[in-house]
Amino acid sequence: MLPRGTLLIPALLFTGAAIAGSTTSDPSSALRSPDSFAGIADRTERSRAMFDEMARVIQHPRCLNCHPATREPLQRDLERHQPAVSMDKQSRALECQTCHHEHNTPTFAGGIASIPGAHGWKLAPASMSWVGKSRREICQALKDPAKNGKRDLAAIHEHMAQDHLVGWAWHPGGTLGPAPGTQASFGALVQAWIDTGAACPAA
Image (cartoon, rainbow, N blue to C red; front, side, top):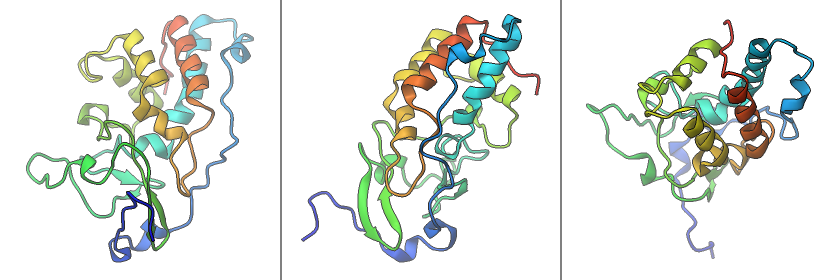
């Protein structure tokens, strides 16, 4: 008998790259602490260096999959989502939360260990598309209230450090590799970046 709440997904829906092996991310990879940047005397350069370290999380597949270049989410290591879905207003058929629930959902289907899930699962707005963008472009968008959902720097820190949906990146379940570090260490890095002027990389 299957556990209550187990979702069965026909294996035929998940073909090709979708049932490939796990991500190559190193689960033990740690983020540098804010203190490790103390040797950079120039405040702006120190801030830029900390954003470069933040980018290890921001540009990780666990984050980029929901910040795609189009209105179609990605999965695993930036692979096409299966089944194909689009959040475009003209072609929207299913909301993300139709399949993605409050928690990761175990499956028994052809290499798909679980369907990701977290509270409020959704695609980032088009204005926060990160795939294909440089670190500088991502940084500038992240600070722009017209693009980031009218967030100031304090709200950006709260989102990065406390939001459960962001936190999923460190607890993806199944064979998916987590983002580097922890949400706590990432949050500390974001705060230190803000405290040093929230400077953006040159490129």
